[in-house]
Length: 162
Image (cartoon, rainbow, N blue to C red; front, top):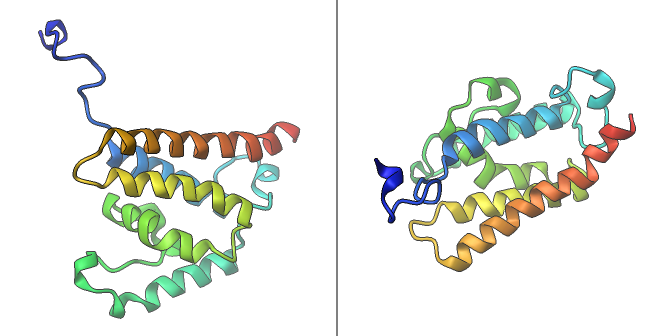
């Protein structure tokens, strides 16, 4: 019945499900990608974008160390992503993306890959606005395309070459 209404043009009247798409899928997959556990073929998990366990342990310890200094307005304090990423809730992934990932990955993840991730982070941050202008929507679309193109161009080419 809704599909017959001229004011309802599917899928444009349906909101994007950011919780599942961004927080519970892309964020988890990218962490697994950077941890070297994304691919079953171990040869694909040894590229320059993979951080070693020592680096992930440091990141997790830094997250644990800031727990007491994070204002309650920021929500739940961060859990060690290295130890608990498989049990993260959507709100924890949102915090990882928007608050913690860029500063904690900086200097660890090669700059080129960090830049690619930053497109996604900026898009997710824009999606959090209560009102999105037409410009915001264009920016989100362009940032997500930049993120996609970056990984297609610079990461998946490595996979194809294997």
